Image 1 (cartoon, one colour):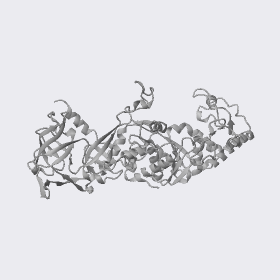
Image 2 (image 1 turned 90 degrees about the vertical axis):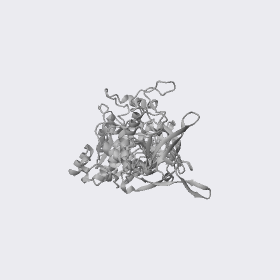
Image 3 (image 1 turned 30 degrees about the horizontal axis):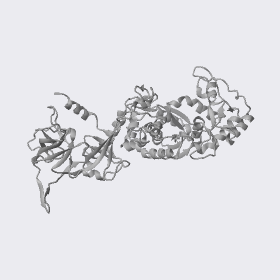
Image 4 (image 1 turned 180 degrees about the vertical axis):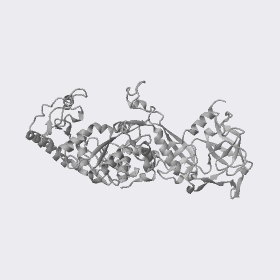
Amino acid sequence: MQNPGDTDAAPAERRSDFVRERVQADRSAGKHGGRVLTRFPPEPNGYLHIGHAKSICLNFGLAAEFGGRCNLRFDDTNPSTEDDEYVRSIQDDVRWLGFEPDGLFFASDYFEQLHAWAVRLIEKGLAYVCDLPGEELREYRGTLTAPGRDSPYRARSAAENLALFARMRAGEFPDGARTLRAKIDMASPNMNLRDPVLYRILRAEHHRTGSRWCIYPTYDWAHGQSDALEGITHSICTLEFENHRPLYEWFLAALELEHRPQQIEFARLNLTYAVLSKRKLLRLVKEGHVTGWDDPRMPTLSGLRRRGYTPEALRLFCERIGVAKFNSTVDMVQLENALRDDLNKRAPRVMAVLQPLKVVIENWPEGAAGAHGAGEHVEWLEAVNNPEDPSAGTRTVPFGRELWIEREDFRAEAPKNFWRLKPGQEVRLRYAYYVTCTGFETDASGAPSLVRVRYDPATRGGDSPDKRKVKGTLHWVSAAHALEAEARLCEHLFREAHPEASQGGGHEGAPAAGDFLAHLNPDSVRTLSGCKLEPSMAAARPEQRFQFERHGYFCLDARDSRPGRPLFQRAVALRDSWAKIEQKERAPG
């Protein structure tokens, strides 16, 4: 089994948590013969999200650390919501994240065995066919403060139950007419032990078994037995299954199975400015609030991948947040910082002007004479690919008489602490020369449309022989060589840090109070056209990440790019330090 985490994980002495301690204790005691076999068991009813990444990293990481194995198993017991599209996407996401399963299984592989085991429970007097309709069945279960009541069908004989269960499988009854329930304890303080349902009648086309079955096992019935069939040693679940553990163990004991896995629960991931419920993510997709499961604003692995996240960054994030016993919410900044820390080390730097303003160097020399007269003089300047990685080397970028700079880097009227370009002020053009603004032109609206400067030829490379101080350094792109592109800038999909907990509503047509959709951010995506990029970006490949200097980390979005007009998606902005500088510069005085 592949274990990519070895290269970017925390030192071994820091990788310790209660789950690993439990596994180590079991191995030391010789439990399961010292074996470690885990599994990642998603239901194929949606795309994986960042919360699943935490479970993937934990299950595969445990197996790798203890010399064991990890399976990928699809818990496909609900045919009405499952699809092969989700099966394929989940396999792709697990492998993209850097893990190769030791075994690929489906709960549907075990439908015959699960059915046989259900028959065994009936024969032992531990399961019965119940005719209560759904609403009455829930009423009979009682509440958290009141015990349940026995079903009037609980005393049926084993022979009658076997006959009815066979007729359920044969399709003699309509959907929902009967269920098979375990006979446990209707007075148990644990609601999950109050005669839980094992099978329900459901005529739906299954993505693997087709119409072969019209009864399907519940998750609780299928999950533990699937673990046992695969020889799983440690069944790692999130905390919502803690109250299901007694039922998990009851089934294994009632069936007298020789192999009994150990269920261990850990806290699921909650993330600010996001929802991590597949049901709610599906609603976002189905209702058109996003463009699909891989929308770069989505917390799905495919969305994060398209946005520009790397598998290394996601594994680093999961390593940093660790494994806990109690639920808590992680700030989105931690996820963003993991990506920044990863890409800062290895993403090539390039210059890109997203909102361009033309600059003309008045004293720039003319080029050599040609057949059609003098051409533009062009110099090729050396630029560093990544200052954090000397082995990344350098590249050359063209520099000429006409350039593009960011529109916000020039002000006709600016406060004294504005160190970028303004009339009479000198700035440094990165890797190039010192230039001083001599004037500017405006368009019909009065906005600057062109800036004129003069350059100091003695400052090539961005240094002055007389060591004079220049506080402002601007990035730029040669106008004659620029690659025309678009840039998509995504912000949080929700305005509220906790969209599921905050109150909604408040205006006509808005979702009801308490609906997470009420907190959708209407400004969560913005596309800039007419961006100017240095010419090397014409060779950019999909999912290749770059740092656009001063803007953040970007990658080429192959899906929305057009011929001659590539679109680059911003994965994450740079840290907030630059924004604080801008706020300070814009302050009065």
